[in-house]
Length: 330
Image 1 (tube, rainbow, N blue to C red):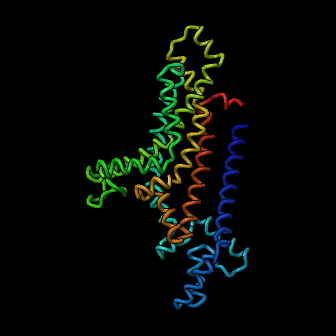
Image 2: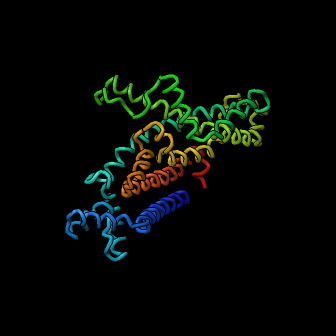
Image 3: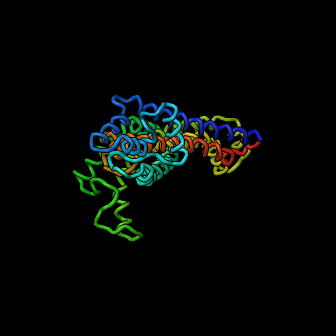
């Protein structure tokens, strides 16, 4: 009962946070120098539209009419959001923002899920080895390597991978998500092109967070190794595999918390990675929107990132009892 109440509170808190972020984006557009919405309306009038037509065009793009009272503008904007209407793009006139964001979202999902899952599996495995072998040369070498990789900025990793494997050694394509020479569909050529274009961006994702997983896992496992129940299990003569399962289960809970949060954040896309490899995900979309001052698209992408982070946190709360049954009894 207490768990259900806690999850309900989390859900309500998440909805409130989404409302706060949506409100912030609304007022941010109004407070920008020159007020983009008013500037767009004035531009339409200069191009021959009547004031009524210009107002309708602006309302379609931004979700509100600039010259209305502030309360009416805000109410109209929130009403449109409740109906999943994010407005229309300025750079691609007539194209709904929801369509543009939805087109970019799957490509970020490919990179984010692949990168975080691969880095999690490798990082946790190396972290366990580092913790168990912490007093050996192998453990010291792995700790040092994890710290070095964790300290390299993500844009440096992306640039190095791009330079080494597309320029020095032309092993992979220089950008994009798929070659235009292949017909989209479930065929070997198209799928192979998707994979080869994704290898370097995914590798950049993996390397950017691999060191963090290693060091976090090492610290978590070491803390569990010092618990009394591990010593008791060893004194009882339990098999090493059983003891290792106890260690892993108790060390995984804090790691899973970080995994859920990182998964939500990565749905926003590593902007530098997608920019370096010209990969058409949310990160690249946000950069192009800033360059073209396409504020509706920028707001839509930002809102989707926030929703992904909040959803990841709620998902973590839902799955905690599966990992640690003791939570269900609280």
